[in-house]
Length: 340
Image 1: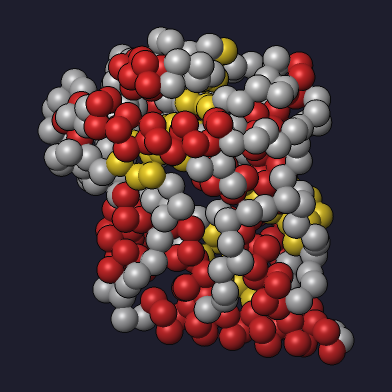
Image 2 (image 1 turned 90 degrees about the horizontal axis):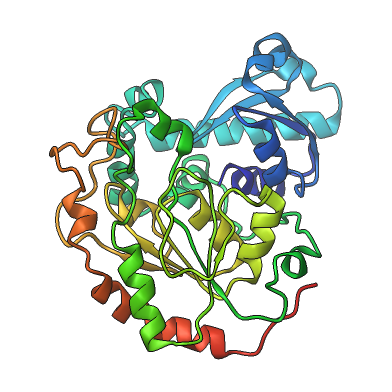
């Protein structure tokens, strides 16, 4: 989502060269490399010693904030025009956020007040993917990004010329590692085994590929296990050719939606109205839900004290299956789009 924002920032302001700083430079490079003007993707710790070289500095997370703008670099007409455009964006951010009570606290206490930020965004008519654009007054250019794919990945994994769907029990492995004693994230849907079994009863030849990282649970009934067996580019290639993706709310849903792959997203502690894409089938919790960042350990311990949170536990696999099976059957019966 940060890459989408920078893509549209450049479309709004005109050509520019930029560097990114993040906790995972490799993943950042993967997302940003297709954006014209991307020069380098660096670790966060390098920023302090190099920040003075930039014309402008933006923080882009759940919000966008202009940290600095230096007119001293505006030596020619193009730079002066760029500075003027960036200054206008800075004023737009200030005008948008000024009437929002406690917005400065949301920014300075990120991510601990992200639930409040999400509810504020939804109340103003925006979602996670376009809130930064609304803040800065630039037009949202759509979900898709130019991401690198591996041409031979389907052949190597035995998926070429085969219609398949993907499924993942996804969440942030590093966040979850803060509580090694709890084997399941609060975001994990506990009925994936039953859901796959129900889908296969209705669509007997359905081929299911489990993808993602090993923090999640292995799902019974899948036909191919690619958990922890793919690079980011390989995983992206598998998702790009998937007819449908099933997951918790998380990073792979954003990636699949960027690739144009339709998703079913089973929501629990995170805010459906904020994180959900209208193009996807978003499953609302049968009860409770939307408690993320109510406590600091919300992803590893249900704030109610449930071993398996009621928000996901009470969403039955029968209900999910009935909602998505017709879409999946149409998708896997459609003509195959070939990928080497």
